[in-house]
Length: 92
Image 1 (cartoon, rainbow, N blue to C red):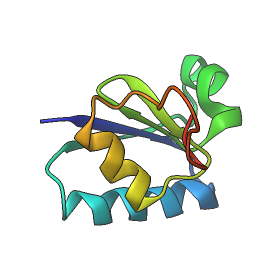
Image 2: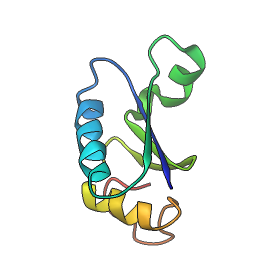
Image 3: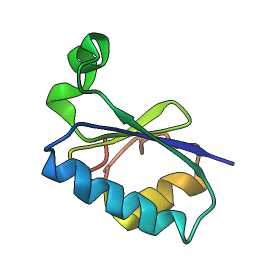
């Protein structure tokens, strides 16, 4: 079963939207979800603050800023890695 990690911070509107999308997709596709609040964790702030929200699938960064339900479902069907050519909006 895939493991999805969502890095977020308090007060991040895009993070709230991304979490809603991820939870909606979770009703359609089985995966574990870990939500990580980076607030106050210096190492996480340094890596993720400028990219929030960040969504990883099995440790592979899949989305930054925006995630679509369709894009997430597509990635979950694969190994989480981005397309090699012509990536869709919101995908890395």
